[in-house]
Amino acid sequence: IQDFSRSWRSGLAFCLLIHRHDPDLIPTLFQHDYLDNLGSKETWETLLSMAFDIAESHLNVPKYLEPEDLIDVEYPHEPSVMMYVSEMYKVMNSSSSLNDIEEKLEK
Image (cartoon, rainbow, N blue to C red; front, side):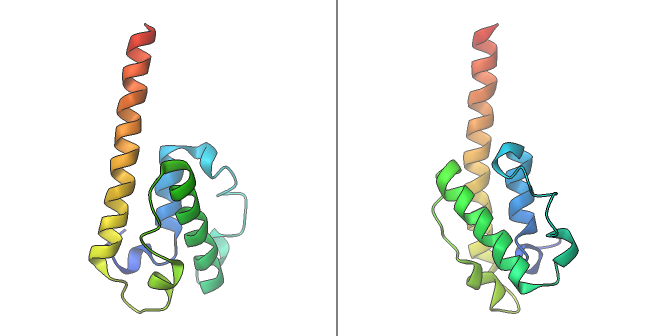
């Protein structure tokens, strides 16, 4: 990832961020041909839709962006991508903190 614009266009970075947080949310990420077809805008739309749907349904991050916001422009709006990623980070960071607290309480 080199920036908060074009590096996020394919959807792979969003999916990898979610996968890093909880691999069970995207268990088949590496079992499809997504990585072989990263030059295809259809793959981008699939990955972006998957990431945004999972972020909304499992992480409670509202859909601030639509796949078209990233695909249909040469340079996606950096502040919008930054806001979306920061919202995902906040949720992921707080759930990691809760898991740490629960593990300490169990001991």
